[in-house]
Structure formats: structure tokens, C-alpha cells
Amino acid sequence: MTRQLLIDRVRIIDGLGNAPFEGSVLVEANRIAAVGDRSSMNLHAPEIIDGAGYHLMPGLIDAHCHVTFDEPHSNDELFFHRREALSALIAARNAQRVLSAGVTGFLDADCIFDIGVDLRDAIDAGVLVGPRMSTGGNALLTSVGGTAGLLFPEQGRRGYAKIVRGRDEIVAEVRRQAKIGVDWIKVHVTGLIPRQRHKGEIQAWSFDELRIVCDTAHELGIPVTGHCRNPQSTIDCARAGFDMILHATFMNDEALAAVIEHRTPIVPTFTFQANLADYGDRVGADPALRDLFRREIADSAETIRRAYDAGVPVLCGTETGFSLTPYGEWHYREMEIFVRDIGFTPLEAIRAATSECGRAIGLQGEVGAVEVGRLADLLLIDGDPSSDVTLLGDKSRIREIVLDGRRVRLPELPERRPISGWRVSPYSTGPLYWRDTRDA
Image (cartoon, rainbow, N blue to C red; front, side, top):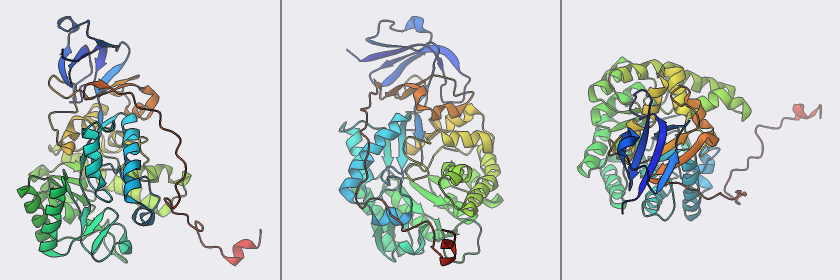
């Protein structure tokens, strides 16, 4: 007999942008079999959830998550204080923390040690309970580096990065990643250099190099995404055939025209910047850095809105996995920023975090909506996210998580204790000058 679950008499937010409506939802096996009038449904299903007074919506999908990083406070910690096997074990725990926040799917476009592939396969095989996961391997960088400057070597691998030099190494690395089973290839297209004179980051790849990545990956059936934080990088990635762009900040009119022409999906990923700008004083962040990130949002919100109005898919991603974006804490936050800074309605923001994000995990049209035929990844919420998306930050309001048609019962995770050598232990937060000791 086919497994059935009835969620009865609930207010439904479908994840497609439509107004909420009253109804019931019948799940058979792992898919939604019926939505709407309960009179045609099996009211004696083996499992019934009384949805009266609650809202039902699709599970969230985070299109920019780093489940293998384990919340580093610095690039130094991420690159030099991680061990492969332990990283894999901790990533499995962190995937459960992500699921506990109502995230039933996520994209981890680049990971340390290539362990994302093994974690994804473990989840798919039922070795552990976790969200649907799509993964890349190491991000491709040129020797100019990314956002970690001199910490990257001139060649080889470090942390989440693989340094490639020229066509042969680009092709070889894309093929290596295809061989191990990645879902995406990620390119760190822009980065930071000393004494740079450009707003945002500087482009570290030529257009021809970006085309090589896309041509090689697409021949193998693998999509490509890129980290872009300046106008020309967004232009070149859209024209080179990238399947998605992370950030796409500081766009000018030419960059905007390029993403509109190619309908290249954008994942702004403002959560990290917003957390630092809004709450950085609570964690000792540099005020200048807080202002910089605040300006990045302000300077980019209008062009992203114009792209959205022109039909460009805009997805929610949070950069979860750093000390400023711990697992299971901020997955709702991008929706809040979309509403506050970009001018989305709450329903538009929910769509950007659900049905639009299906493309990020290779399941566009299969997940992210309360619609007949879709995979049954659902949240029962105490409150109305269509009026206020921020209530999704309160995990006590998530009354039920349904993943692949089954109600999720996550184990209570034990308290985590410090691991020797895992975190950076700085001598201090600044220099100790003689003059500063005179009042001691």
C-alpha cells in the first residue's frame, strides 16, 4: 500500500507567488497527490496532521551554503586548521542543523577536501537524515587568488580552492571534478589584491578562460556558477554561458543588460554582509568593514531589482557556514533583506527561497512548491510568513518538517565541545602598546 500523509485544513502558501488559500494536502509516497478541497481526499490516511490555525509552505532551499566550512572566524582557520575526516563528520552534523531550520535543500557550490560529494551521497543513501544537497568540488581560481589574498598558493589546492593555470589545467580540473561526481563547477571570478584601485573586487579571469570552463563543463553536462563582485565579471560570465551567478553586485547598465539578455539566474547572497553591517558591533567587527558591506547592499539592490523586474531569476542564498552565518540560524535572513532592501513582497521573497531555488539543486519544477506532482518537502508554520518572513527565524514556529514525504524527527544533538587545533587562537585582537598599559 502506498504511504499516505494528509495535512488537513491548513492555510497554504504555494511557493509560486500566489495568495495563500485554505485547503488540505495529500501526500502519497514522496510526492504531493492532491491540493485543495479535502472532500476528494482520503480523510482516513494512516498519518494525519491537523493544520488548523497553521500555514503550510514549501521547505526552504538555500542556494549558497558552505556546509563543510564549519563556521571559521578567518580564512587562516579555514585553510590551515581543518582535517579531512573530521571535517566530513562535522559537516554531517551541520547538515542536520540546516534541516532543523526548515531548509529541505541547499547548494554547496564549493567545499574543502571535496567532501561535499561524499556527504551528498550519504544523505541520498539514507546513511543520515539531511536536506537534499547539490554540491561542487573545489572552487577554480587563478593564481591571482580570490578573497584570501596571499594565503592562496601559486599552484595546487588549499582549503576550498584549486589554482589552475592555463587551458590545460582548467580542462583537467573540470574533468577531474566531473569524474568524482560534482553537480556544479564553481569559479571564483573576482578577488582582492593589494592596493587595488577598483570598486568591489578585481576580475582574476579572462573571458576566454571563462569560456573554457563553461565549454568543458557543459560538454560533460555540468552547470557552472561564478563568484562575481564587479560589473565586468558579471558581463563576461553571462556571455560565457554561466548557468548562475553568485553575488552579481556592483552591476552597471552593461552588466544588467547582459544578465537580462541571457536570463542568467542571480544569487545576491546579502545575508553575510547584512549580518556584519547590522550586528557587527556585537562581534567586534571593524566599523570600516561594516560600512563597506552596507554600501555593497545599497549600491546593488536597485540593479538586482531591475533584473528581477526584467524576468531574471533571483534566488535566495545565505553564505551559511561562517562565524557570522552559523548553521541553522540565518536561512530566513535573505528573504528579509529582499523585502527590506530590494522591495520584494513577502510572497515574492518566499518564491525566491523555494520554487526559484529548485534550479540550484538540479530539481527545477520538482521541488519548492505546494503543487500536485512536486516532491513533498513541506513546512508547517505557526504564524503567517506571507505577512512577515522574519518569523521563519524562530525555529519554535516550525511545527512540522516533511522531507521526501516523511515527517522529520531529528535527534537532539549533544552539546559540542572544543576540538584541539580546530579553531584559530589569536594572541589578541590588536597590538599591545606600552602607552596603553600606563593606566592599568
